[in-house]
Length: 596
Image 1 (tube, rainbow, N blue to C red):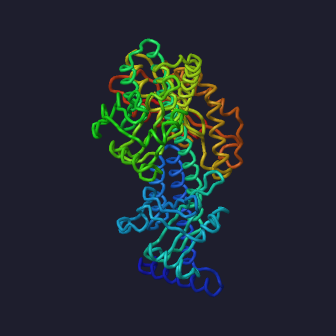
Image 2 (image 1 turned 30 degrees about the vertical axis):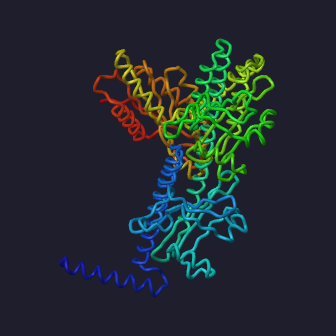
Image 3 (image 1 turned 45 degrees about the vertical axis):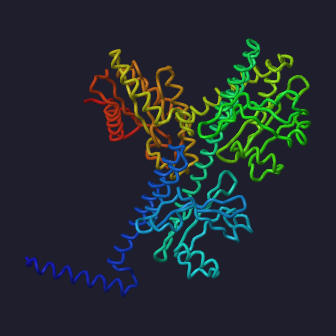
């Protein structure tokens, strides 16, 4: 036997001879092979890391309806994964200029306090303006490893130097077919060797950001519609109350006070007043007989007004139904005498409409904005016009029964639309948009409620957690669209099993689902789990790349117990999750009942 030192010597000698033989034969040396294998492993790890990050980003985008939260999370995740110094969002204007949006940016320490791109910085690229988005319209990315080696024009380099940009990669953000903006990754300190996987990742993130912007805009439109319907309802309700009061009383003081108070609140203006012309004054003078004004502004009540301008230039027009709508007193074309009068009452914007008594002009309904100019909506103008018409009735005109009935019908219609809008808005907050089953937020609410309820009634509560076996492999092989379709089909199939009104199927996250079964013991939950498993199997969703056969399967974890005061929602979920893990350990495509 040789000493240990001899073995080491022989080993080193053998390594040198092997290396020499490989070099002489033109083959890679063992050290070179080890280096190549190490580099390939690093590439695989990077791809896996990017895929996991993309899945995280997509999950967060789908889970939130708040655009600022989506962009902040996405830019932060993207910046850290790409290992760059800044990720920002550039939004196009209508003229194809644009700006960097400060709320939609993340920068690494050392660059985030310098404010290069972070103050809604306007950057109007003449090329993009002339070509209406340029190559981005064709969904092309732009990748520059070193701006000083890319053959850029000097004016372009000057702009990049202004923002300390040394390397960048950009991908367009589309809303449907419309180019909305650009997701940009920047390196400030040095050139950057962009890898193909990084560009693919940036492009995928930009695509899903486009979906998020579209979803957010749809939500904003729904909310705006709901607000408009609510405003319409309140205005119609005021008209309804006004007509009712006109029928019940002829006390103009009560009518006036009610109208100006409620109108100011509904329109959110600074002053609403009723101005009455002095009898036999030929419209030269008059005073405000009713008013509701914010404390910050002077009261016009009982103030005598003498205005020869009105009598000479405007009285006849108002008798014929003219309304005056001024959005900004400083820019309106007015006689100087008229302008001085309005400034006396601190008016910045106003709507004036006539109040008629029979065929004669009795006074004016005045709506004032005193704090700042205001762009009046057409619905506001029409509402004020309707108010004036009703008060003209109160002043002596015939009762407008037909108009009242029409307004009552419109009120019912507005209420119906409001209910529908509120229902749609509520659904957006509790339903998963892809699978159309309850989302994680709704699941948490219902499970918390059922734990408390079943404890009070001393009844069983069962929870099933299940997910799709090898779903990542399915997604990678068939693509995200096929993966989304698979999730939707499975959710629909399971929903046909979970039929009771008290039961709930929810998407727990990613490919994982949850089923809440109140008043159900372990044997009942096992039966439901078997039916769910059979329903998924009957779908016969094929997967050529699956690990077990050719069909998509699921694994299920079950927990069932009568809740005690010490039982928490988290504990119940953890038990079902542990059972699900055991089902996977047993080979998947099975169920396991949790046993303490």
